Image (cartoon, rainbow, N blue to C red; front, side, top):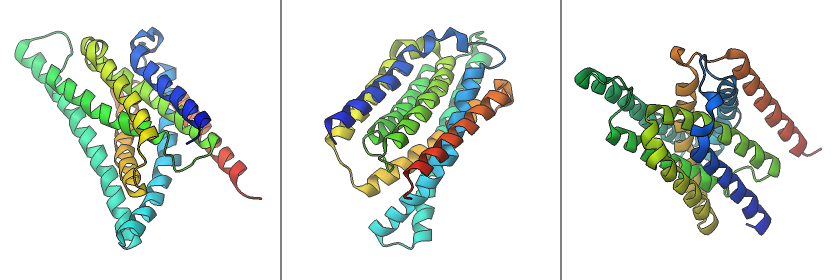
Length: 256
């Protein structure tokens, strides 16, 4: 990777880190019904799922087939199974947060809506793994064009905004104390690892599949539950805008 590309991805990693650090300062997001900005960000993230994650999973299935000599359909099934594993793992963590919160309220009569600190730390640890992989992929994208990288960055930046906002809402004290620093460390560590280590394409594909499934779960968890009181028009606008940008970028890179 040349110096200019490394500088660009480094700035992107710093922007991700800024979201982790300062999401608690964005008071305008803490409104009911849900902030239009969060719903817009959720729409962009959903657009990213359908316009990038699902097509790239299919592409990584071909890589998996070539590397393992498996039939293409079987290889694709393994890739989607990895994505499912990522989704199931993060769903389990989200359910653990909910159960822990309810348990504390019923057993201790607490008025604050907080999960057990151990469960929250486990959730942060899993988020660190996801963020480490995403930051690694900044330097190892399937689509190496500048336009593709910028779209990837924009979608993930907004995804981290909604995900961090939701995570911090679970336990603001722990997030502001230790959680955000762990996320920043994972972000910068993943970016540095991407510069230093060039993993086999098969490993990158498996990592992407696992992370893709986790992102799908987090996007759905943040936007779809009724209690979120999400706003449909900003959500729709984010999804349509991102899809239009991806289609436009792909049209520009196609050979004449």
